[in-house]
Length: 219
Image (cartoon, rainbow, N blue to C red):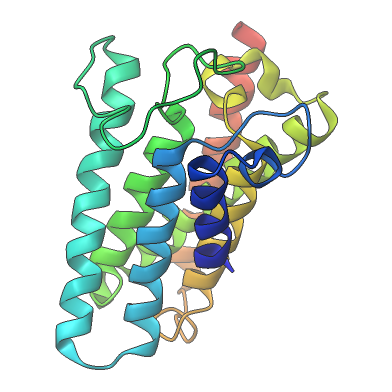
């Protein structure tokens, strides 16, 4: 689903089909770079899950490494206010992109989620890192769900956190699908947590929610 949706968005940008870029009229378009990122990560997850051949696994991890670097670099541009020249490297954005400050640049939430999911793909075969993978995916799911509600109803406290409010509705949906697919993958399907690990997961998730609430109230 993620791969097909990403292809449709790319088609929408190439042939200027607005409905494919935003799904619903009047909401933020999903960026071309974001669509390509989902296409690559969707392919990586498919290779990791469906192909047992080590060569395909290496391809998946190579894609994940590339997307990790891209995600960090893209987010760093906004956080540290510089331009690395990657925003419109492969496709020009709309002349006046709605509700976005930087043409062609994914939101900080999108970029960091790409980086986190890429790390999960890189570490998902390591038994020692499975807890990290689970906590990371749960975090992406929680934040993406809140962004989804914010874009759909426009009444979430996330409006107070500008760098989260710039994420497209379709982007949040695709992150939910991608993260859920990884949680249900054969690598994590039988993953069991000890009592101490469950406490750690609940603590980490609760801390994440408290951090967002703190930033929302402080803003």
